[in-house]
Image (cartoon, rainbow, N blue to C red):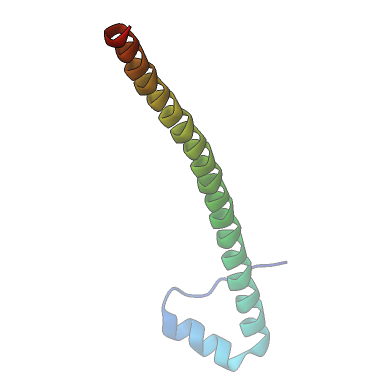
Length: 84
């Protein structure tokens, strides 16, 4: 597929698209292709963020269980020391 180079000014590209249906179709195809590539990149980034959140959630749960276990162990050992 060849790429049509359009002048940078918006008016010139709009005029070209209004006058030439083939140019309009090609430019739309290029725009959609560009949008699709951007959406694919965003989708990959979102997937990475979701996976990282899952990993962080697991780490948070493990850390919380460890802290609670240490607190319970400290309380039990203090109770046994002073009540024993």
